[in-house]
Every structure is written in structure tokens, then in C-alpha cells.
Length: 440
Image (cartoon, rainbow, N blue to C red; front, side):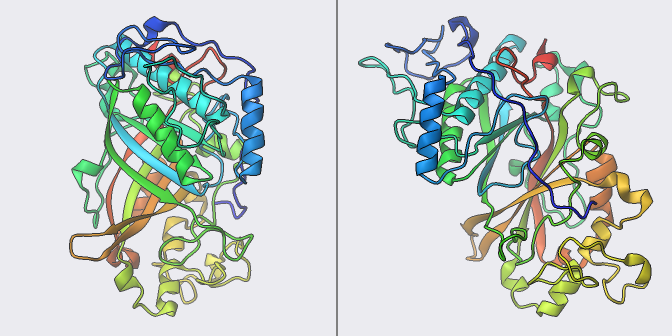
């Protein structure tokens, strides 16, 4: 992997206006109060209230409010690729798996359009329109009268199970998309694995993530049903200027391909036009692996720090490789062939041997911590929400994970859930929507 830290990607500007869809577009939505008056547009079968995309004045007001509240600026939504893939992890996240409940291909298309509309509005911010007397509120109000984007990103993807016989999509299955496999030492819980769809939300604060989830869930009722969910957080880098730490106390994600290098992203992250065996609609997307990993911190905290460092191959305090004096320094494995300094079984050495033969298996790693309280016997249920993006799951993630089989860390961790997905190509403008080429 590159020794350079990853940097946020440049993204195109948001188009100035987006037309609200016609009322017939959401006939599959059910369960929302039927009467909507005032400035909202009622859906044909469920009274779906279209909130709009936010006018320029609305977005300016949201930006001013965000600055006063110390929140992050809006991330432009439109672009060739989804905007949540390349940036460094923000402070708050939620990963939610859904099963599609739309009853036809047409209803699935309406679902994807609706998710797009909501993501477009939420990431830009603005003031939800008022509703008439007796109508349901157009927004939960948990962020106040103005929706502040706070750097919100919405990454939307599809799992292999969406390509069964329900929607006539079997022939459009991405070439490298399969159900998630189990590796030795995994303890996978089927209730926390897989899904037809994946939604990954990130923002500067937890309330913004939860607000977005509530908004999308409300407006897609009848089209998809939550399967499993996990919330996470990323701590500030300590010391400043380094990398956030995981629950084991080590810096997480030091080495990544450079997101500012178009050649590296095209070689490792983005599905390319004309790629062998890939349906044309996948171009611009990226394969997403989600891996939920519990950490047995009660046991880990009783391990000598020196032993912890040999398991990772880095100093815990500084993040430096055990053979170097800089956090982004490249370890010199060639001068340590027997692993006397950095053990041959060290996590960093197995994950990225830094050989010409393993260069093509690099992944773009993004991870957050989680804390789910206590388990039934009173132990801490904490760990890592590991995500990574790549061009080919087997060539990249599977190759890395295979090298890690049996590493010393397996005594202190237990992967229990997650899944394999394809993060859809980006929404290029106001007339586009998630998965348009897939569903056309």
C-alpha cells in the first residue's frame, strides 16, 4: 500500500436545481399518513410528502447555521462516483442492511429514485416545507427547523441477493458479487449478515446520521425493510496529525492507496468501463466489503504492550513501524527476512507484504469503532466496523484476509457479521438516480 495518507476526493459541484418527481412515482410506499396538504406533494397511494431538494437560499441558511454550530460543510452529492467512498472517516456513522420489499421492478425503480431524492436533499440541507393542518410533519425536527448537512454522505449499494428472480435482474449480476464467505476463526451470525441493499451514512455528529436514517426509512416504507444495523464512531487523531485509533489502542488505517491518485483509484477501487465480465452498468461503482469485528478487550488489556506491538508490527504510542521512525515510513522487510524486528506473523506484514506480487491486492480501508454496551454475560461488546472498497473482492479483500488466517490477533477478535456489496455508480446530475443504468 502507499505510505501516503489518504486525502478527501475532489467532487463536482451540485447542480442548482432539481425537479420534484411526479406523484405517481411512489405508488409502492405504504404506511405513511394519507393526508398531506400545503406545500408537499402527495404520493399516489400513501401520501408521501416530497420535501424538495432545498433552494439556494435554503442551502445558504443551512451552511450559515452549520458554521455557527461548528458542523462540517455540505459534501456535493452529484458526481461520477459516490461521494462517501474516498473521504477519511467522519466522526459518526451507521451501516444499515435492508431487504427489498418492493413488489415489482417498477416499484424497485421508485425505491431507488426515492433514496436518491432523500440523499440529495439531506446532503445539501435546507428548510423542509410546512404542511397543512392535519398533515404529518415533513421532517422529524430532530435537527431543528433547518436541516444541517454536517458533511453527511450517503453511500448506497446492492447485494447479490437482489439479483434473484424477483426483479428480473439475474443477468445483470456484477461479476465479483457473491454472498459473504466465512473464514477460519469467524463466528458469523446470519441475522447480522448480507442483505439486498446497504446504506452507509457518515457525518460530523451522531444526530445528523440518525436524522438521515429516520428520513430515508420513513420515505421508503413499503419498498425496503431494515435487516441489521450498526452505529459507529471515529475518535479524533491523538496525537493531532496522526490517525484515529481502534479499540485496541492502535492507529487504524495508516497505509492506504492515495485517493488523490487517479491511476491508483482506477487500478484498485473503481470498476472500469469495459472490464472483463462486468455488466456495463457497474462502471464507476466499487465493491464494498463490510466486516463487523468484535474485540475481546478484557483479555487484550491484560496483554503486555510489547507483545501487542509485535502482533501489529507497529508501536502503539507513535504508530511507527517497529523498524522505522515515521508513521508513514515504509517498513523494510527485505532487511528483516526472518522477522526479528517485525515478526513474519505481524498483522501489517501479512496484510500488506509490499511485494510486486501483492501490489494489486491493496484495498481502500475505512473503519469505525463501535460500542454496543454489554453482552449477556456482562462483557463489553465493542469492536470495529471494518469497511473497504476495491475493484475485485476476490483479488483484493479475499487475498488479504487469506494471508491473515491464523494471525496472533485471532485470539482477541471475532468477526460476526457484515456482507459483500457493490456501491453503485454515482448520481451525475439532478435527472439521474441511483442504479439508473441497472434498472433501465
